[in-house]
Image: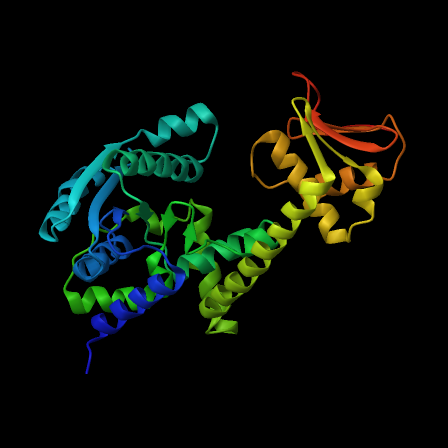
Amino acid sequence: MKSTAGRLRDKVESFCRHEQLFLPGDHLLIACSGGPDSLTLLDVLASLRRAWNLTLTVCYVHHGIRRAADDEVPVVRKAAEERGCGFMWEFVDVPHVAAVTHQSLETAGRTERYRILRQCAARCQASAIAVAHQQNDQAETVLQHLLRGSGLQGLGGIRPKNGDIIRPLLALTRRDIEDYIKERGLVPCEDETNQSREYGRNRIRLELIPQLEKYNPAVIADLNRLAVLAGADEEFLSRQTEQRAASLVQEDQKGASIEKKALLLQPLAMQRRLIRYLFSRVLQSFHDVPFHYTETVRQLAAKGAGHCFEGLGLCVYTTKEQLCFTRAARGAFKNRQHH
């Protein structure tokens, strides 16, 4: 009978094959902090290396937040070397970046981490970056987006594969990982900030989810199923939006536009999606567009010429037949409407 660790390893391998996360012969960069999740990720991928002919490089990102990170670098280096993997690490002063960019430590840390991981992947010519998100992380992400009033895209949570980022451990729960760690005799590093209620995500993990489990013990599995369903719907609707936009949206150096009548003839869901699409094309950014912005712009489409709305650095205005999107002039007031 196969051991628990062997069964979980097979589960991850089957998930990677089903989601086509990597191919035989690939070079993977493994993001590893030495914690339970990332150490499990390293151990599992190392066990699959020979069968898949993988080249593995481990990367540790020091965020400049915790002194303990100084001691974790050699621990992760040793774990990588014991498994025959390459190793690299980089330092970034996240508190300084957060202060300069007026971001939270969480946001700045995430942005800088992925920036550095991509730099390191390019340096070692890795084809993908493996990160250690698991099913509990997925549930936390879905709840975080739900609490922010997210749409379908946010409910889709984190994807198994998103461009160059792959997440093999989305096949496992946190309890699975605890079992794997115990049976394999691994000794992970502990990040003391994970217990801090200063961070919103930690409060979801430490306070909200335990409460929800009292109502539904299977809430982690159910939230992961919601993410799978919402993610598939979002992918389909995004393709539909791009197809509609190809025939309806006109773009030039000044911005983009759509015929008002053509927009309003679309189903309501497609109207909103096309408006968000226009925002993203002109801003060259895929950040969420607030619902009230979308609705205000949608209402403009029913008005005559000479009306406008300004927000998110854009000016949206009407002509006799068109709804036009262009970057707002510097110094323009945010969220300004002219009727």
